[in-house]
Length: 304
Image (cartoon, rainbow, N blue to C red; front, side, top):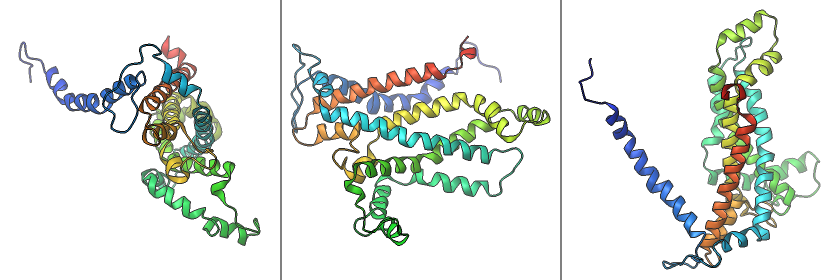
């Protein structure tokens, strides 16, 4: 069908994208700008609707947050918990990807296994927190019962008051919930690689390990970059499991920056200005980290 002279179908593209643009501006852009502005004000107290900009010391809230020992500890905890769960997460996801996409060994029932591995990701965080609270219960719980039955422990161990144990559990929960999602993303990337490359390598005598490290991984660089950046953003915004599972304890061992921000805004003196400042500091940290990762992992040949 010929396009009528002087008539453009581009307007329909703008029309269809309008609902998203409106929703983004109302629910994302406006709250972000409002939060950024609150960081430069004296807004605090429940129900406070009148606040003023700090004209004499505009960065007072940001300095106070950076000098707060709890924020520094929460930032360290957040990075530590993310690294503890991301390394095993990406490792297992890559191994499962190699297993599911092997050209020589076709796995039966792939759909079933993919659903099973992905299932933890669709369980709500509240349900997961209740589940692991029950599993690691003290003095009686399945984990304590198993360790005592096998002779590993003589007396029940209270996981909720041990800082190292609490961090390991939170990191394991995050790993368990997200490795299936990472696996699906990586499998999608592998399926986009031309089968002819694998066929040529197999004709040349390449084995499975060589195929994976010399063909699959180099061709997954863009997908790995996406996975790393999105995982970092999610990890540095970690909130639900640390908050619901152990409320940031014990001794703030699982206190993350998102939990710190929540506590600043919605408990005690309701320091909305400090919470907003902490949010913008985390926004800048995530932006800088994302930029560094992108520069380190970008395809230099493609860029040239």
